[in-house]
Image (tube, rainbow, N blue to C red; front, side, top):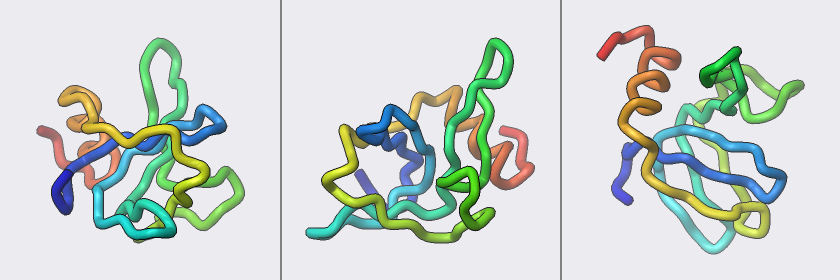
Length: 91
């Protein structure tokens, strides 16, 4: 992964997060502008937070290694929705 790639991080809880890959270290994986993925009818929605009661629109978050199942490139269709949701830009 390269800096600013849009990635999907799957947590041990089953929650999925989409954000821009920033870096990783011994503690965890850092994502910029992370959004939690939520069901929205028959499709997916994005909430600009990582916790329902957490800060809205955190700019940079560390996901601890022990809580991560995997980090993968986000599907192109989902990337487009994430960009639209996080910036208002339609691609």
